[in-house]
Image (cartoon, rainbow, N blue to C red; front, side, top):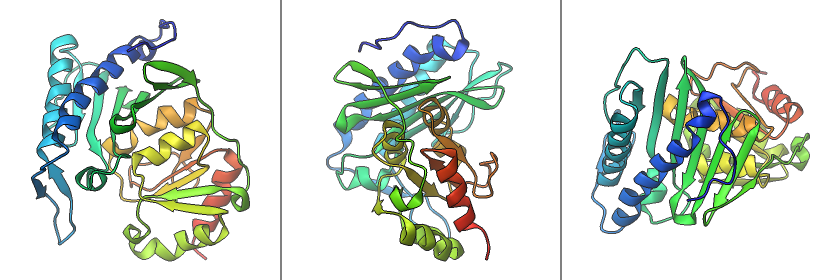
Length: 268
């Protein structure tokens, strides 16, 4: 696959081609396993949390490549225990983000890959194998690769919720915050559901303007941060800060749109 840009000297840019290689290794495992799936439930407290052989095989393939090529780097994946090293670099891996879509043979599931430097995500890849779309972001350069051909991407710049195309994966996953998110839905121009990590990819590419989610884990959001920011968007928490540890995330096409969403989500 061509990347279409010169590698820079910054560490994150020099690892970009390798991150894309990791995504292609995961594709080989996920694309051939989507039919005749055996789905397990790894959830607790009655909450369905599916995992498949493809999730584990894809993460295993990516871990093997990292161990072979960058053995000193740490690894933090969804399906297996963390590999902790003394390196300032580690990789965050979500082999299938949107396993529910994957098990239903829908095309918008993704593989999420991030390079962390001193615990901060500096390079992100959102790969949509069924659509043959790979979104990458680092620094101020965001790129979409389709059929091996790269092109720069940019957020829409939308500044008002009244004009915004809003997306969230499942409006019923917000628990006690559902009423707050309903305020956003009522104010947005249009709302779409069900896209998981792909929603953030499309925000970076300019066809969505706002994504709000809760309950995310680090492997769910690490890759999104560099891609959204490189495309000119804003990503932060529900209170107007940058601490995503609680799993509550807002990604927006502009600072103004982000702040409007924060205000609507604030306690009355």
